[in-house]
Length: 329
Image 1 (tube, rainbow, N blue to C red):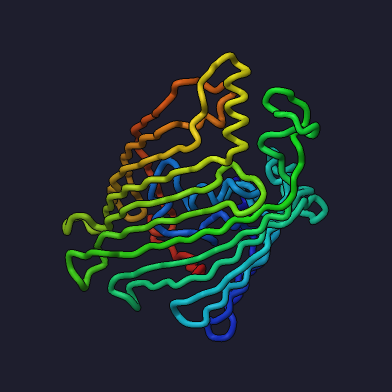
Image 2: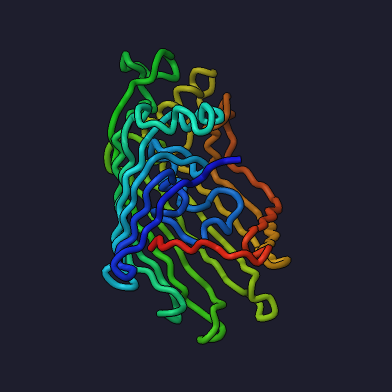
């Protein structure tokens, strides 16, 4: 069992101001998010991967103390910003007990501060819904330099302790637009979407990251709740990460060079089996797999592929229970 969220959510001034405070996570689709992303099985959910790894806040499965303010000048426009506690203890097994020491404020090592402005419509206001946003993040926490140790030597070769660094910023842009419908008055149709993330100061694993895809809701009139998805995601790695990986290869006796980019593709079909139940067979292909999670990097690995099946059950629609609908945009 995990406590993903423990918050107070308040609407004020006739749906123009929304306040969220408590234990939450900015990577759960709150910033640079889309309802389409978690329809994919392999490398994309809630937010683009670059947003989630170029910062010190933990994965979207855990939470820390936070506050977020959302302002809606009009029904289709918004400005929002928040501050999240960066606390390494939430990465510990069982968070050191529940609620344990990580529920205090004394373990914080910085703040993660995202800001976003955008335009968003849905079928109640637009026959062809769209969403556009621009965002900025500032991470004040301490993190490890991806290349150097405290003696300014290459960590992969000399060992020692990674050089501590503090502060990094990113900017991002996101767009989503329904471009075609078989029936102008229906909700079925083809959506194009994409995003771009750029590291503007400090060091992160990814220098620039890009997402581009197509999503077809209801590809067949007889199957209006099915979908077909195609997405590509590319990383341009930080030059320090490339240097470090090349040093690791050379230390193991290889002359190969680690590739400075990686691209992933997923094609899937979402089959609506019953209310709340989706079965999604998928195919994934990766160009230049990074092997960052491997204990030993293997040279000459230029591609990887997998096929699989994701089965997803949502309790509320599956059991016909009410759902919490939160204003995020």
